[in-house]
Image (tube, rainbow, N blue to C red; front, side):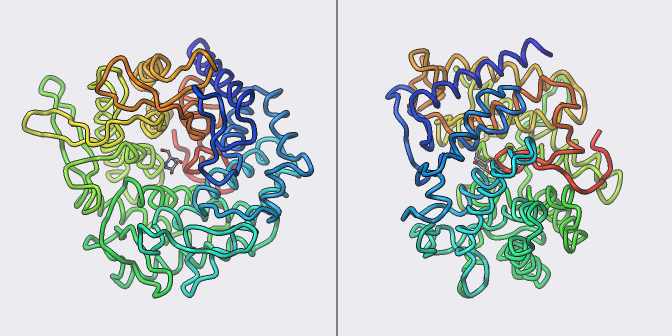
Length: 475
Ligand code: DMJ
């Protein structure tokens, strides 16, 4: 669908152009103030998050210029990755955005200097693993190597954070032929899988894990279980690592843990919201245990359909494979209605479902340009070829365009409250909007040979890494 694909590309060109003009080198753009923001500690988040999207869309002049900027001797980014800047950074965000983004830029372009930058940033993050359990702290100082946990988790590390690193670290080891990186994340996996096997996952349902972990005692803490914030990408990486890494150690364990987690999700988290009487189609959602509250779903959890589509290939039985795809469709239907039910056509960040009145109410009415729904529509379209997913994605893109776009700068911003029209903007262009939202939207409208899902795996920030394992074809 070249016309729609090119409209998404034009959006990327415009949004990246605004960042380049007003905020180059900063983490993110404030599109109305026309300045840069550094909420991630000045890691150049948007610049690195945009690299592979630019490359995939054929915006090669922008890609080349961005690479030159990153490699420039004496640039703020180079100083940071070489440990010359006294800065605390989030291990998770730096891993998925910077390490993932640089590795993807390397896999797409073959540029050796980018791999060197990737290795330098991993070397800085490595200090975070220096804990009694070997499970990393959430934050690390890139100069001193001092690492620490967050006050609001009482120092505990977060499942989605330390559980979403192996894809990048194993890839880095493979590309650099240096096993030291994956040794860190392998150890984390062994710790987590062994606790799970011994019934010490902190969750009452087999296969699921508590969102918090005490790195000093080496035990799970709390008991909140979620496929939203704090839990999400841990489950996603079980299937992505299994599917794509050629020499994955204990590969069967990764797969088994994924299928057990899906079973746990089905029995303890999956709920029906409503059934369409005319078509008999079901609308399901994934509700957390504890934390953000039963009966609700965060937009973040809308990545689940995409994950289930990946899990359907080589599922334990053909019935399980069909069931994964069916649940994926049922959840995606709900996620799409989270958009269509709002006057501006955009989803709230966290909603509650009422199965009596069959309505949605907003718990957090913001929309911060998140990718998860269009991400799942992309996987479902690639799997089924059903045009409905393109139609739904296009409608969402149209709503984004009218609510997000700031014509004065060309930047795109989030929305403060999706229940109000006209919408008011949050003056922030998220780096994942360029890394993920626009990339998945673009790829929905390409043919399936563009970034084929049997050749590429997307990390949780949508950075594509080349697959080194032959698995059953996805479609
Ligand atoms: C992204 O940074 C990643 O997708 C992460 O896994 C979850 N949150 C955001 C986007 O919503």
